[in-house]
Length: 238
Image 1: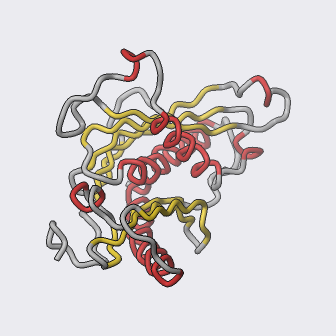
Image 2: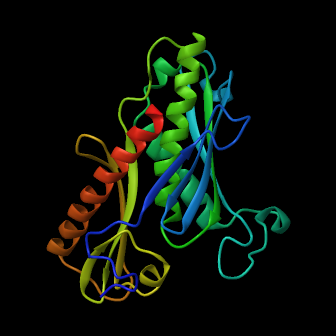
């Protein structure tokens, strides 16, 4: 039995509230159970220096966790004067995941930055960030098309992410903190609507697993991402 009482293939409740902030070109508050992440998309009419003059855009991501998003207060990274390795790794993952579904030529010379700020953490903050960032990105792109700044939608597909793991010998979907902190293995899958894989991160924490174990985790991820794709679609259509 999972600590939450969920079935092995059962997701936590998904909620996506769009237009959560006033000034960002695209924004949403995404919740996977008790994990909540504010995702905002900011559009700039410029690109990094190394991309100037190429007629292409750029998409990047940044990630942070608020000091009291967890059980105890964490020090702000700004106060430390540097980002942790974990933060850098996650924001690079967010950027790669979103760029996997964006045609940079159709975006034109615009840069879109996706800021993912964890308000409350209960496992799966990086996967919620990616899933919410896609919604914020699409909303920002809708605004660019409406204003005439771009002609075609550069977003080629939906992208979502979900965690899976082996908990007490059983593959389970969408780990919360009690499961994530004691799982024998955990994995994060970034999937593209239509059946493609953008990224897979899988680690044996307490015990190694075989190929079938990995495939079972992938199948669970496909179940979970199908639900996220549906929630994303409903969010951007509101």
